[in-house]
Image (cartoon, rainbow, N blue to C red; front, side, top):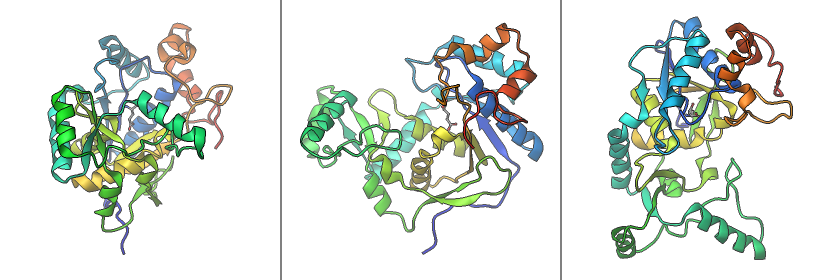
Length: 310
Ligand code: GLU
C-alpha cells in the first residue's frame, strides 16, 4: 500500500503568514513572519499575508491595523489585496456541504462545559479520560448516532450546535495511511511524517453561526492560495494531522510543512498575546529597532534571549 502523501514536484514557493487579529503581535509572531519572508526571498517565492478573522467576536479592526503597522515596521511587504477569511464564509460553507454530502459530519449539541462535566463524572469512577494533543478532553462521540428525527427536532428548536467530523468514518474511507512532508526549519524537501488525526477525536469544523473553524478555513485557504510551504510554529505541529485528513477528503493539494521552534519566555513558556512586554508595538515604543527585534526573535542567530530547547 502506498502512503498518501503530498506531491513533491516543486512550484515557485508561495508562503503565508496568517495571524488572527485578536491581540497584538509578539516576538513569536515576528519569528514566524520573518521566517516566511526569508524563505520566500531565498527561494524566489512569494510572501503572502492572510488575516484569519473568522472569529467575529474576538477579531478587532484595531488589531488588524496593528498587524499591518508592526509587519511594515519589521520591513515586510506583501501583495495586495490581503486575503481576509471573513470574506470567505461562502467557500467554507460549500466545503462543509460537501463533507455533509459524503456523510462525514454531524451536528453535536454538547457544549464544552457539558463535555467537561461528563468527563469529570467518568473520571470520578474510572481511568483518566483520553486527551487530545493539546490536553483537552476528547469529545465523547455520544451524539454521533443520534436518530435523525431527534437531530432535526433540536435544530428546529434553535439549539446551538457544532458540526463535528466523524473522524473514524473519514479515516475508514482512505485507501492508505496518511502522512505529511515535514521539513522543520530546513530549506530541504522534508521527510514523510505519519499523521494520526484520530488523536484529536471528532473535531469541530463549524458552528451553527460560524460556518468554519480554524482547521477547515486554514486548509481551504492554503489550497486556494496555492501555498507550497506552510511555515508556522511547532505548537501547530500535531494539528497538521487533521489538516492532512481534510485535504484528502476535499481533494486538496497538501503543502510541505516547516514547523519552527517557538520563542519562549524566561520560564520556558510559549509567548501569549497577553504578555504585553513582548508585543512588537511595546518593543518599538521602548526604543528597540527592527534589527534588534529580529535578533530577539531568533532570526539569523541562536534563539536568544528567550531560547527554547532545540
Ligand atoms: N491563525 C493562526 C494563528 O494565529 C495561524 C494559522 C497557521 O499558521 O496555520 O495562530
